[in-house]
Image 1 (cartoon, helix red, strand yellow):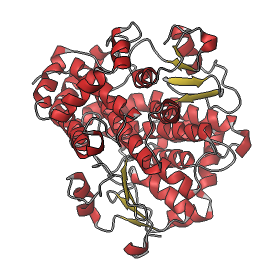
Image 2: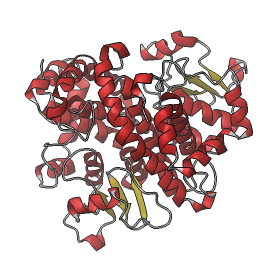
Image 3: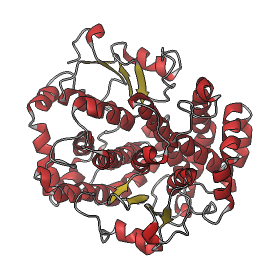
Length: 249
Length: 249
C-alpha cells in the first residue's frame, strides 16, 4: 500500500530501508490493508528525527531511535516498536479484547522483541556502532550461548503458549483472533530461519505448533501478497543476518 | 505496604529479592499506596513460575521471566515489566490521558528500559547465565562505549523531553502529572548514580532538568518513606552493580 500518495496516507512509518524493527509495524499495517507510506524521504528523513530536525508538534516527544510512526490524521508522532504496535492495535483490529487480554498481547510482543534484541546482539555484542568484524571474537562466544540456550528457551515459551490457547486452535497467542503479538513472533521466527537455518531446523522438530503458526500466517492472502511484493525488503544488514560461522546445528 | 496479610493484598509481585526490574513496579505500587505483597514465597515462588509449576488459570499465559504480577481480584497473571506497568497504570493513577498520551508514556518507559538493559549488559555482555568474572574482558570493552556514548545519548533524550514538557514545569515526561514513565526513568537514573558515580557526576552537570527530576521524586512523602523502609532493597547483584573498573569520568 506504499504507492499511495503521501497526502492520502493515514500512517507514515519512518525507518531505515531494511526489515529490522520496522518490519513488525509493516506486517500489521499490511494485515489491515491500511493506507500507509514507508519513509518517502529515505535515510535523510530518518536522520531528521534522530538529529532533532523533524517537526513534532507540541504534544509529541522527541524520539531517540526509529522506528517512528506518524499518525497523519491525529498529528501524533510516536517511537518505540511496542508502543507503536500497541497504539495501532485497536485501529488495525489487532488488539486483545479487554484490559487483561491487551496486557497479555503486550507481554507476548515484548518477549518476542527481547528475542529479537538478543538475535541482534549475536553479531553486535559489544556496540551497535562498531562493525561486526570489530567484535567478531565476542560474537562467536555470544552466538554459541544464544543457539544452545536462548533459542530453545524463547521458542519453548512460544510453543507452550500456542499449545495453551485452544480458543484459536493453537494458531494465535491470545484469544480467538490474531493480534500484533502474533506478527511480532512470526517475524522473529522467520528472521531466525534466515539467520540460523541449521539451528532452527534442529529445534523446530520439537515445536509443531510453531511450524504450523509460521506457515499459517505466511499463507494469508494479504501477507502472502506483501511478502511477494517489493515492499517486503530482503534480509540484509539488519537484525537478522546470516553469518555461516555463527550458525550450527 | 508489604506487611499486609496475603489474602488482603490486591496485587502480588513475584520477583527476585533484588531491586532489578521489579523495582519499577514496586515504585508505582508505593506511589499509589496500593495493597501489595512482594514475593511472600521467596525464591521458590519465583522458580515455580519459571519452571511452569505455578497456577495460572485458563486465561493467563505461561511467563518466561520475572517480574510477574498477579492481580488477585481479577485473577490475572502477567509478565514483562512494561506490560505490567501499562496494565497497572490506570488502576494506580499513573497513566497518560487519552490514547496518544498513553502511547507516549509507553514510549518513554520502553526507552528507559532499553537503557536499563544496556546497563545490565555492561557487566553481562556475553550471557546472563555466566559470571561477571567469566566475561570481564568483554565487559570492560562494552562499558567503555556505554559510558562514552550510550549514557549521554539516552540522558539527552530524557533532558530534551523534560525540557519540552512545560505542562509539568519540567518535572514529568508526559502531561501535567506523574506517570509510570517517570518512575522508570527515576529508577534508571538512580541506578546509574550507584553503578557509575564518576561518569554520572560528569554528565549530570549538563542536565539540570534531570537533576531536578531525580530530587523532586525522591522528596515525595510516600517515595521517601518507601526508600527509607526495608521494602526498598539495596543495590547488590541486580541490574545496577558498582564495579570500580567499569566506571570513569
